[in-house]
Length: 434
Image (tube, rainbow, N blue to C red; front, side):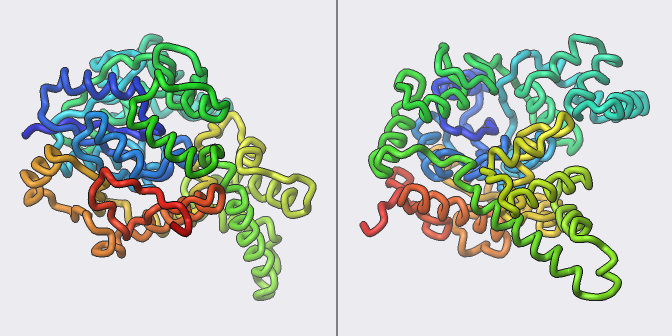
């Protein structure tokens, strides 16, 4: 059997995704579709509005044969790291093709850019440094550097989010010499960042915005998604879905603990006394990936404001307060979620190499494919969480936090990773005391 890989979040799965699944299967001429899907947290630095098992069932209902979880470490990472993790899983499962949506729909140009950036030439490095030194963000500096060296057509490609992610997929293939052929199709409907509730195909952002406004979306989502949404609404008494601001108290709790540790360290010894609390706080914050001294200082300043009561932040307003033109909001939010979850650099060393493949669900075709490749897969294939809890401890913790917040906000319990759904058609929500 030949397998096609789709890297996704399905937050939630909508009509544009159905189009992508159907087109990807057509142009790849493969037998089985494997979805590498973010779990309970997504790459823009937010919780998924529906839990990973519910989204898995929707995917299986809509044409996917086999769903594998992208570990939380990768899901809450930069586009480069996100792509590296997803492609490593595809490679381990002997996927022959991946297919992604893009704004440019030009695989040759994306491959040219990916090859150029993988080579990391001196001319590119110097040009990139020049634009970074002028205060531009990394994404903008990279686009400008590519424009200077390859031409305006190539630089413009890197201004669109799906082009960037597709290019990172190709970079991961080239960098690791994976035997995977990339394919792309034109993204249909509204763009990634477009949260409009009107159009031929709404983006996932548009669907989420429509759900907030309680705007009808029946024509934009498949029946399986609609059923899951209606089930949720009935069980939660029509409350809104889970959002980043539902984690505000957890963010405050973690930042308060870090501040407390910084204050207590002042009194440990005369040597420690020479450093102010702010320096200790910054040192602690530097334990987290992607945090610079400047960003750590900004987090400290706003934590003090929060602590002193001069600002009553939510997760979203705190993220906005520390955002600068050098730090995209999604990058800030990913960092804040890593702080909430306690995912520091030391814990993240587990993912220097891909440690496991966590299966979320499959149909009969997916089962057959797994059976055909299982003996040749060199890393653990996890079908029962309890057997690999030492490897999965970060994902288990992340899922437990997500489930606890869901329960606190909406009085809905979600089956945890130790309780396998068994029959994927079973409902994965449980009302408390039922």
